[in-house]
Length: 316
Ligand code: BDR
Ligand code: CA
Image (cartoon, rainbow, N blue to C red; front, side, top):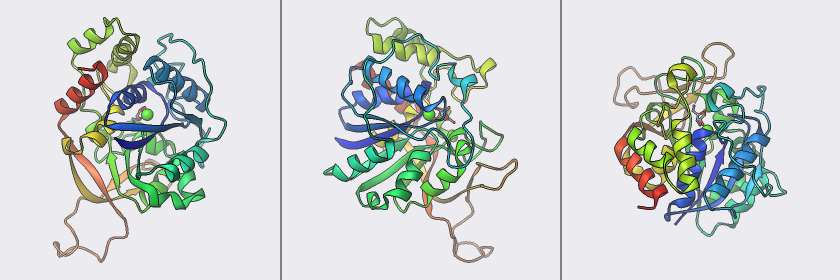
């Protein structure tokens, strides 16, 4: 199996990602690290531990990470993810606690200890990952790839042009994009499109298995008409980024320069994806490009990822 670490802000769709990751036999989830985003970091830790217990995977180490972005204040998304950050489903409180080291320490330890290079899957603001890269740059040698949910080629959600995870900590995203490891950007353009049909959601909600009932409730809980939710009803959201680790051929990507807008004002947090022809192919280019290339997801076989997620979590 592929060794992975998920860095999340659970989070309705982060929960769907975790459920998939721990159930897929092709993934070895070595750790889960938590960061402030959809809700405060202690809420993220609680939600993450609850999801793992519901999923029957109570042994995976979970660490508490950054409680605020590098520069910005915390701006949680309660209007999207509910007062508890995970849809207010009334799930039981977790029975265990996070490990007694912080997220950056756990990330370093697990990355360096892995016999095979680790794939990192951030589905949240990138604060923990930026702190890791700056504090322990030696981890880069044992990172296979970073597949992150964040950014947008086209329209944003937190602002007209910025996606929430990048907007919440733009400086951290800029650190990630210059990490010097292969990166896949699973942005809003594809994130929005992977949906579970209503009939499948209804089947999950009626399941005798608590984790599947939880998944059904998470998929059903929001009304996009009133919530302004980035994930439409039935949307797998962050879970699609984990599908992309298992089945990269379901994505259409292109290696493109990506830059985060950091200046204050209406563009802050935008991912500017340069889709102009390559230098040398155009008479209009102005010298070599400074930005590293990122494998940007431009299209997704949505039905393929929905099928992969459903058959994995339902054990079919
Ligand atoms: C991202 O922000 C959060 O609301 C979701 O969990 C997802 O990671 C979408 O912009
Ligand atoms: Ca998330």
